[in-house]
Length: 230
Image (tube, rainbow, N blue to C red):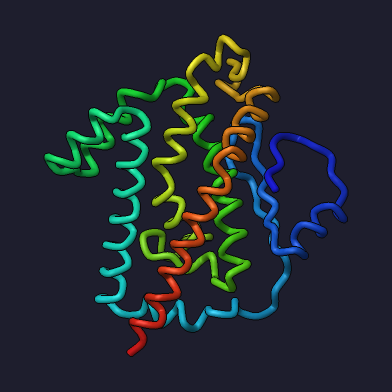
């Protein structure tokens, strides 16, 4: 559940979501995350100790970092294929680096309006990832790339998913101003109500595929927990 802007909502409605392991994310009008409401739990997550063990040794951490990079690269290539099959084939044949992706992506994104749009998309993705982690019994805070950050594991998975966020953002911004989906205000650019609907619809159209991919990442985490115990 993602709530954008200054909306009135009853506490009971928020409680209903959190009691069913659905986090409620609050964003301001520029898409920046203000707060996340989760169900109260006075103990650790079911697999907290196993996760702590997994990230307690350097060799485990390096393996997880390599896994994150490999999964992100796979998604980057899939996104490039959807943007340009010619580019995708070129990188498959000649090799592919993170800086290659960033250079291509930098040419595609409109600089002025990009941040506010990505903030909104990121908030939607993060809420979905946190929900998947909680349902799986994993602690969403125990990350590796984002170690000691709130929702560190969720941020690690969102880093893997970032290319999909980029693609959705790029496609949204094509004609967004003409359609009135994004507006300039005294505080800078913001996504309009109709724009929010369009972003949400784009996400929902891809939700099944994205959730399936996130669940496969969670399966990998459990596999590493089983394999890397000393």
